[in-house]
Image 1 (tube, rainbow, N blue to C red):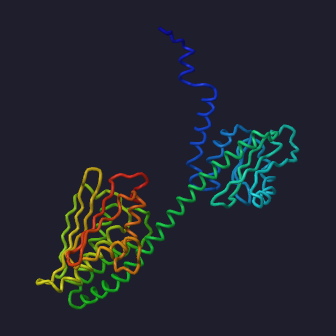
Image 2 (image 1 turned 30 degrees about the vertical axis):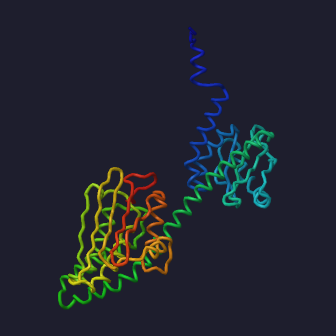
Image 3 (image 1 turned 135 degrees about the horizontal axis):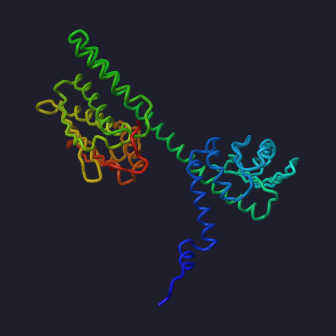
Length: 378
């Protein structure tokens, strides 16, 4: 039987010197990462730079954009004014360079700097500047590797920003699709009650104001299902004012799913399609009524929302084209909603559309109750 000594346990628990150095490097990188994921700014440079300098183990380090120093950490602060003159050459060549500093301070630890380019989307965004008494070959390689890692974090930041801009553009496009189909008709319906029923006209005008305020104010990507359904109810009140008994609506909503975060304007377009297609077929029915049902239920780890009409139905091939983003299809935002659901939760959470000519349409939305990065805006 082997006897364990205290020294054996210590080596096993802490690892070798190389293991400890690796751990420190990874730890410093993980501490710098969150700030860098916000992009290359003065604030992110200041918050990340101490960790980057610890990662490199140098007397000084700095981050720059293409014009000047964003932040400096460590000794040699007086060299902040020297660095900008080296940046034009770095931007032109895109290559790491070593620069000598004419320093008049006898005790200064920084006599040379290594400038390694930060590249975002194939464009020089700035530089990682590493200051030392002498730039060894090992330090130059280390600066290159850390600059490459920083560039990767900045690329991710740009990807996040691009994704946000894309989602905002998609929501603006969806608003533009909804408004022509609805706003003018709603105002016409309200106007028709001004003389015959002023109280109702006033109530409808307030509902219309609340609906447009929700739809057109600046939102984050997500809202709660409760907020989304509240807007849908306002929309339906306005549509029923237009069509009266020709439109019958049934809502069955499980209270457990009301707080679930969903993409902004993901239910309204489905309801508008259902109303339009349901009423198209109502004239051919004996009772002349179009029926719409909205169901939201709790299904274990998911929330399921179903929007169903008994209208004219649709050719499945046309639905496929609408989901693919074909704007010639008469389906308000169907492809937009499908794309945003897939982007938020994965391809398995795209819209499911069940339809056929003359058979009505049911659209099913599944969303997980909890998903990384998905939270309703305050």
